[in-house]
Each structure stands twice: as structure tokens, then as C-alpha cells.
Length: 176
Length: 334
Image (cartoon, rainbow over all chains, first blue to last red; front, top):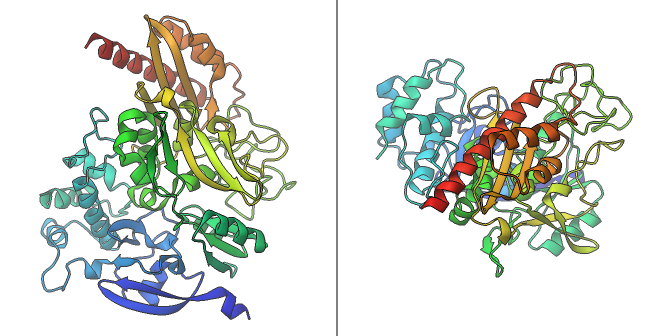
């Protein structure tokens, strides 16, 4: 019946642990994380991919979890802010930097900012350019991150409190 | 959101036959636009055919020196690819000018081409829109249309195409590869998107069931100076108010070839053929650039609130042509 046609079994690895669930095809990753797995770090902001509050890493790349159907992610590796530091004993350097810089007010956008920043660091290390990277002589070498680069690369994460200057500083603190 | 069936395709043929056997099917790529439109109720597919795992995720060099980009190559990987950055910089810059890092990580090359307009009337079920619901009227024509078309619009639709990438592909003479029930074919990127006419519900020349399988960049444009420049309301993460992609070849001190396309001015990337013809054989001077841009934009028919786009697009074109001339001359001097 409809139930069979509109639901599927899907397996995701979330923060290192496999989870097999039967999901309604309409289930987006954000809702699966928050409602099925009680991982409430990723936030629902706009629910349309415009604010970045739902940002998580899928196979190590930052994405908007509100726009991904869970069924399409079968076999993928998801990392949320809860799993960013591995065993969770010590905070991730980005989490520590956000605390030390007081890089938030209400904190609602913070998990998305931190996951996005983790993605930014990996992308820059892999030599991925941004709109403000000098297009001359592309090399594939790691892209140095200055403030202009950080601001451009994090433009998909809105902060309605306006904590941007401190968010930028916090990310600068963890640049290798 | 309406319930839907889900099929994960393992091959192009599997995808097109699954599409054919499911009424109301849509192909699912990165989903960054389709999933949003499903949440809004604009799209109500009965089945999604997931094409993200098709083996179309490579950028390959072609024997003739061109480049083939698989339809499932993610926007971020396309923009970062060294051959793309080195040989077709306008394409890399255009992709990086669009959306956010998160969206570019999910969005595919094929999906970028097939994204729908961001006209607010199209996205709002409570408003008339001939593109969403043919015959219902156009709310934008006498409504909020500051972002809308100044070229090639019709009484039925004044929407613009939102892609930055497609503008660069049009200027670079890229070609779109399609596969469908009638087999494989290629369409020039500049002709892939349509003008609205009396069928604004049709964004592109794609036929029912056809799938974008890739994009081909020609050897002729490889390594030429090219660039993309975009004007928008904020410095990052906004759709264009106007944009331009240019590729330029100088020969013996005159312009041998100029490929020029405007974004955000029309229902499709606007290939500026009249400007290109005026530039061919001309000395690369500011006066020549201004003349060519004015010639192209003399066809503009701005609406009540978007006449600003015409001088904006003109100045973008003149600026990019000037900068690329400097690049070409500097290369020759070295």
C-alpha cells in the first residue's frame, strides 16, 4: 500500500554509529537527527537552505541538512556538532575558540556556524578557492584564510544577533 | 508535502526508464532547489528518481583539448577543479559567485542548469503566476519586479533565470549533453534556456524524461582570458541584479573573438550576439566596449522599477572587457 511505496529503510552512520531506520521519504536529515536520534544540535532556522543553522557534515562536507532527504543518504557518514570532537571528552578547537571569543549571543546559529567553519577549514586545506580568492595561477595548494576569505566562506551562515566579528575571530584562532 | 515514491538509479538508462514508468516523476540531484520547492508546494512529484549516484561525477579532458563535466559533479568541485580554474576561469568564478558553500557542496552541474526562477510570485501559491500555473496571470508585472527581466520578457512572464554558472557556459560556447527516450543529443548552452513567450512554464529546451548528463566546454575557449562579474545587493550569498561573463581573444591588436553573456537580465542567460559582432575586428578600446554594450542593451525594455539594470549591466560589461584586454596584453608582453 502507500506505506510501502512511500517509506524505505535507510542506514546512516551518525557521529560514527550506524543507525538503520524506516523513513518516510519526506523525512529530511535535519528532522531525522533532531526527532529520531535526539541530536538537537543542528537547528531549524529558515527550513529553506538560506540561514545555515542546520549545517552538518556529510562525508566530511558541510551541507544544509534541511534540504536533504534522508532516504537519499543511505550509507553516508554524517557528523553533527555533537560528534565534531570525536569521543566528546575534549571540545573541538572551534568550539573552544567560540567560547573563548564569546562568538555568539543567543547561540541558535552556533552549531551551524561551527560545523560550517569545520567544513571551511577542510575546503581551504584542500585548495578549494572562494569568490574572493585571487583567480591567477591556480595551484591546488592550501588557500590561506584571511578575514575576507572567512567572511566570504561563512556567508551561508546567518547570525541575527550580529556576532559576525567574533565568529570571524574565533575561526581565525584555529587556522593552522 | 505530498508523499512520493523513491527510486535510486544506478545508470542513466535505469534513470530514464524509471522516469518513464512513474507518472509525475522528477529527477533528484542535489535537491537544493527541488526540495525547497516541494516544501513550498510548488513542486508536487509523485516519485523522485535519485540520480546523484550515477557515474557522471567526473571532469574529463577530451581528446580535442576541451573538457567534459559530468552532470553530477558538485558545484564546489567544479569551481575548484584545476583544469577549470586554469582554462575557463569565468566558469569557476561564476559558480563561486552563486549560493553558499553548503549549497555548492550539494548542488550538481545538471541541477544548477535546471534550477527554477526565484521570482517571489512563482514561489508563492497564493499569487498568480503563468510559469507555475499557466493562464493564472503574472503578479510581478505590476507588482514587485525590481529583480526581474529587462530583455526578452513577454506579457506572460518577466522572470529571470537565477544561475550564475549558466551565464559563463553561454559565453564560453559550452554545450549541454542530454539523454532521453529518443537517445542522446547536445544543445548549445546559450540556447538551452528559453525566452518565456506564451509558454513560461517551459524554462529550457529539455524534453519530457530527458536527463542532463553533462556539459562540454570547447577547446577553442580553453586558456583564453575570461572572467565573471556579478552585481548584487550584498557582498556575498545573493542572486545577481546583473552579471556578465566574458571570454576574449585578441589577434594582431584587434578583437578576434569576444563571447559575452549577461545574467539576471532575462529568462535565460543573454548571449550578447550584437555586441559580439560589433567587437569582432575592432580595436579593444573603452569606446568600442561602450558602443558594443549600448548596442546590445538598446533592445532593453525595462519595467517600472528595474531600469537601473541597463546601465549596471553596461558598466559591468565595459569593466570586464577592459580588464580582460589588460590581461591579454600583459600575457603577450611577457
